[in-house]
Image (cartoon, rainbow, N blue to C red):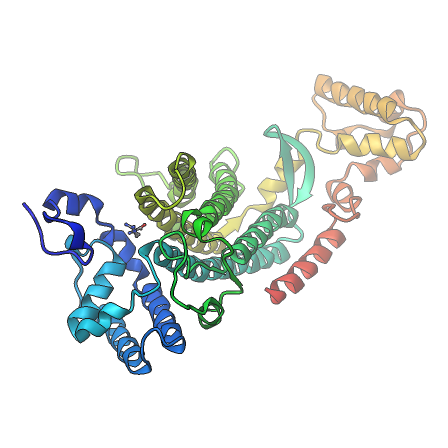
Length: 462
Ligand code: ARG
């Protein structure tokens, strides 16, 4: 089977085979770039007229028709098919269908090689802004919870073993820090991608007298690419974004992993609302944290997108190669997945109830204030290594006698170190231990409240 005439068919004697057309077509996924493609073409046509490469009248006709095409695509009136090849060809073909020869002037001083990079940059610029705003909403939600749970003490873990008591708010703010780095990374990425590629044409630039500064200004680009070959060959900004998305997903995934554990009967720290859990088709008693599990699973999928783009790039000879068409599906997938996960995660955590009693009980076990005993001794002048040993012996004694640290008498404490006085009773209280850690970054209530305030201030600036 062969197909219709192509805009580039001048040097061809035969038309493209149908299966090749199917195989090479990208319209089914790059159609989502239509509004950016049109935005870019409008700026390009305007610049061409400003430089007398086309007439003002022609530019006007092109621009108004492109706007009509945009409306028609939005209304679903324009249907694309594989033979359209890609979104650039589809729109140009439609333009020429509507205004004839004049439409054929739009592609002057331009190649699809610089056009596609333009579209993707415009698309990703808009998407990053949306993702940052989702992250800001999530941060605000974390802060709400941190404020609400400011009195809740939980066991902090290392090696998945109870380590030291911390505030649940401190735990929430830990993720707040991760997400704020995600925001910074995305903003960095935005800074580097906001560069005008148009003008590079196929790879060498154009002999026509274009004005790249004008196009950049119209499209809101802060910089203009400096090397035409690099411009069409480069996809760093895509890899960089997917890497930032991967880290962001990893943070969500770790959060979800804890929530999966915490919602188990064994932990019982949290109850995820019915609306954000699902049942089992066989076990009537089950309430599963599927949303959290799926976010964890989808993290792997975004890592896959990252590996895909890095692998697509690694062996490409300079400059543009059709392999680069494969950059879009991983990118779109990473954007969609991250946006979905951020949205549903923020809703899920809004509908969670923490069991502060269970958390407190758990924090009481595991001798989680043993370090405080050692630090108390250090404050009395005992070298830390010695203090560590004394506290360790006290723990061993408790284990041997099936007692908790708060169940030992002062007399028993003095068996290990004569200088202990009644203060020791205070030291091993959980809230005391928490509130001793008042320095920057510590879990004391005062330090956490201060960090919440700073966070709120920072978020207002974004
Ligand atoms: N659909 C192509 C892509 O996504 C557009 C560029 C095609 N350029 C070319 N010389 N065939 O990369």
